[in-house]
Image (cartoon, rainbow, N blue to C red; front, side, top):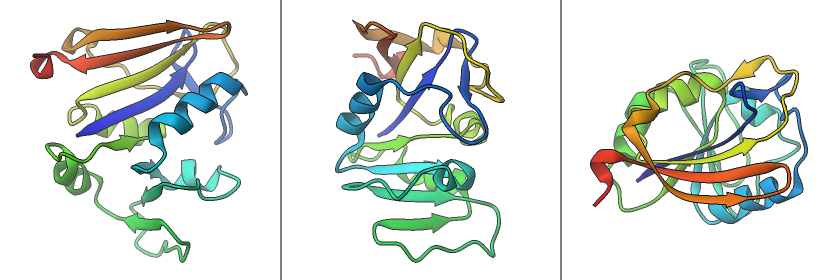
Length: 160
């Protein structure tokens, strides 16, 4: 199963200069709780914005740059995102799509679940979550925090 996890501001802003434009401890904790011991998919720019590979996860870095390689434990590189998404689309294993914008846009048709932290304040950003049809998803969870609202959405065809 493919899940997408993202934090976005009210205008769907998600990043600035390759980094999160905010630092919200509770959101980072939710991200860690959700993704630990899972595979996570992210683009090369998103990965390079991390201080180090995230522990206790297998990170799959997606790039179209065939020259790009990594020799880091629990990190692999893939060059075909759609093929990768199709491999996990109906898998019993939950895999998380973690960004950035282009990866999210290409992944949306394949994901079953959205895990979204709706940050309450607007930030200066240069990367946005792509537009998509919210009607394809049903909200199944909502938890209020001081700086954001965490919601989970399931693709309607997957709601039983």
